[in-house]
Length: 281
Ligand SMILES: [Zn+2]
Image (cartoon, rainbow, N blue to C red; front, side, top):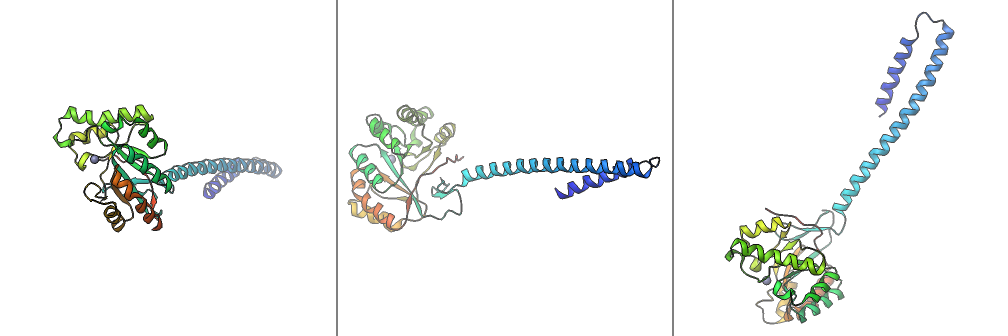
């Protein structure tokens, strides 16, 4: 900026010199010079003003950029990466976090018990719902949404997507989005396939629906372990920063959950949600 200003001054000064014709007398020259100096000063003022405005504009731009950046990299913003870990968008964010997910929901009684425990520990989760449950438990679906959790799509009938034809695949996925949107006003953006099995056709539909699919990084094994204590141990012993933990909406899980939430809280884990969708190929 200073260089620009100096250049203009030099040019104006040269113009001034050229402007002072040899026919003019010394007084005239001085008078002209004075006028020119005033003009230069005026010009300088205008330049400074323009410069200030320019600076203001660039400040504004910078501010806007910072705001954009701030929004994208604000503390507490997370995404689920291609390996299904939950990661902070701002890399300097070093809090220990886990993502809790509950599949095959909303099953009924266990849903309420799990919701209450999550409230108690100020934890949010992704609930992967099935149509055959959600259709008859619409109030629970609404509760989950109203409590600030994320409702994800786990297909209507929980079938292996690899065994379905294209039409049925589309139906299994889109029907859930329609139902959730009807009940909560929000269309799901996260998807988990039954058994974690995806087909190319399913991925095509997910892309059309602007959905991110995600499996998990650690299974609670609440579908095969026989006691709540075993589930607790399996989760607490293996928890890691960024873990995306798979639970199911069932009684045994609700029984194990309090000790798990307690232990993880003591280990300074925060239970967070992804804040942006990343569409995969
Ligand atoms: Zn499932």
